[in-house]
Length: 114
Image 1 (tube, rainbow, N blue to C red):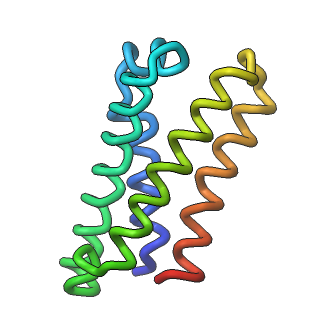
Image 2: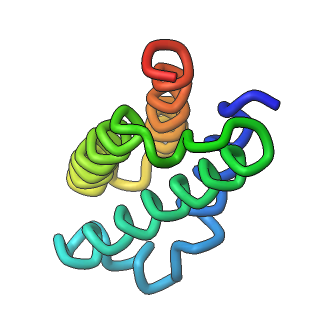
């Protein structure tokens, strides 16, 4: 099965299921809460990569490229959520753009790094 499926599952879990109401309400006003949210998101993505690795490609979650991707994803997600919280003002269009960009980054990883 394609890694992208697991990355998207990780995205859904990390950005929705494991994001508490407190995180959602305060990540826009607190860099610490935002950093914690993104850390939970990254760890969730990594756990889903581990699932994929055990099932289909042993060692994938230990590759240097994987860790570089996770560091880059942390920075990208943090910056994106930071700017969204400052400029989106609850806009539905910005929500869709935000989610599109999150998924596009995962797709880019799938194509160019994986």
